[in-house]
Amino acid sequence: MDIYRIPILKIEDFLVASIQTPLHDAAAVQFKDDLLQRIYETKARGFVLDLTAIDVVDSFMARIVADVAEMAGLMGARVVVTGLQPAVAISLVELGVEMAGVTTALDLDRGIRVLRRLVASEAERADG
Image (cartoon, rainbow, N blue to C red):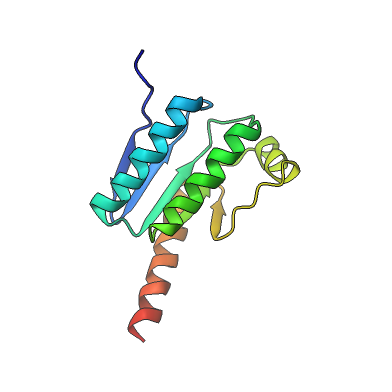
């Protein structure tokens, strides 16, 4: 049985992944591994996780989102989560999911703009 792999695209200095369907155990583990490897290989300064297509999350999916965001942050990538549907935002809060250090944006376009500003601001602080 083949495991569904989520495409991880490189745009500028960032990686972008869009989760289109709820992830199951094997696909979630594969996504985490793929993402961390791509961050390492590309030296990505940021990561956008787009959840526009997800309209419901359970505790497993919520944990995956939080884990991926935390792992990417530990690898030095700023994280922006985009496209949260109202029901997903409610579920994340009700499930007690903490996403420290994660910024959100309404859609992918805004997410990339936010990520550019965050990375540029960090670069200015590092230089100054």
